[in-house]
Length: 230
Image (cartoon, rainbow, N blue to C red; front, side, top):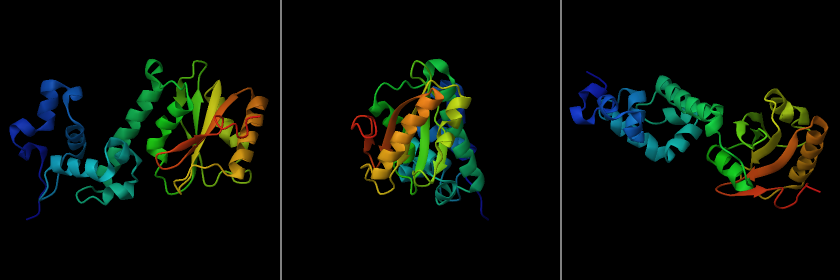
């Protein structure tokens, strides 16, 4: 008979739920928190071992957050429901960070912007355009995905890039897109798009701070290189 190992099947001292009651959520490891979300393992694998497999396969929490639903389901024991619940929990955590004013990331340098986005964007297999919407103190209001596909004048309208900034009443904006090749070297089209972004920002009264190009563990700031920036 097939069955799944439950958290309650674990030795008492290894049960994440009981440990949370004793020490609180902050006292639990990543694997224990994931195990609580998963609830069950497989016939041969405990729920803690399944959590370990996910963390190892995807390189930690940020990797799990980047993984697609189908990639998560490639791990034996992770079905559609478990994959959806994992993605939902991680997305809620990300949104909560953005929504708490005193805990919002503050962008002071191009490196700050790049580090905030690289975990999600550096390994994408197609181009995505995202923006960082900032308030007057350079705190991040939101980081919406604007467009999926090549960044060029025919592929994306500048109005689309700034629409969410207008809705959020953002004071300034940073755009970012990734190069799936892994090489963040700017193209001539990237320079042209940067000039368009700057001009559109001036028209709308939203300061355009930078255009970040993300590769594999590397990035280029168009402003630092003065590409498209006068």
